[in-house]
Length: 51
Picture 1 (tube, rainbow, N blue to C red):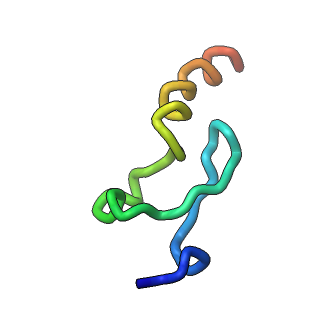
Picture 2 (picture 1 turned 90 degrees about the vertical axis):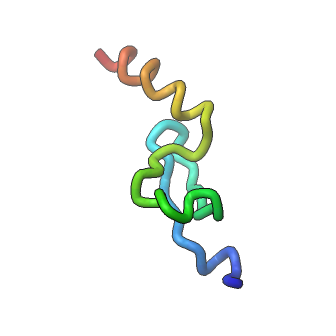
């Protein structure tokens, strides 16, 4: 078992907060882009506002 500081992390493009690896993302970590379901849903709103 690793310490939380040793786990890989990413930055959420919607909210800008860092998030760390979770066990449920074990097989799909390379595809994970958003820290939460809320940020995933808001991605469309942010891109629509930018246009």
